[in-house]
Image (cartoon, rainbow, N blue to C red; front, side):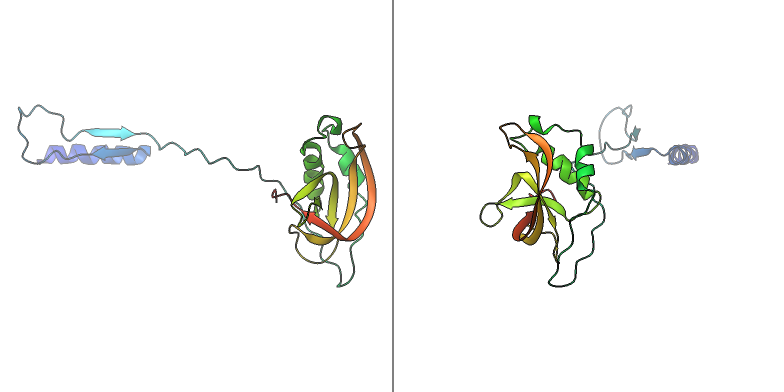
Length: 184
């Protein structure tokens, strides 16, 4: 390689480095045959690599703080802000009595205040969440499916017959279970 070619290569590398591009340089060596008029040693600029598309996952739900555990053998009071938070949710329960859209929206809004909010367990072993009742885990320990000791609040009156928004506190249930329905 002679001196002018080295300078040209060095200048191309400096230019590319300053521009922030990637280049591929191929030094066409070897024992090939041909007329010598080929394109060996070409500089091919490449653009930035495309960002891979992420695998779809459930939408992460924002969460607020968690009220500290109560003393052993006691339970927390039901927070007083629940009805105001529920009333601020714009989803209409009359349109969602057979799915979790309304109840999910209410639980998500409440969890911005305290991560103890979730769903009231239904089924043996807490296999599913209620479609009209939510739960506030009021005893010590983590919020895991089947955690016992919850305040139960019925937030859909008349279920699917004539669903309405309500804040019906059923009371504290020491044997009642909490679940996140796999959402959190």
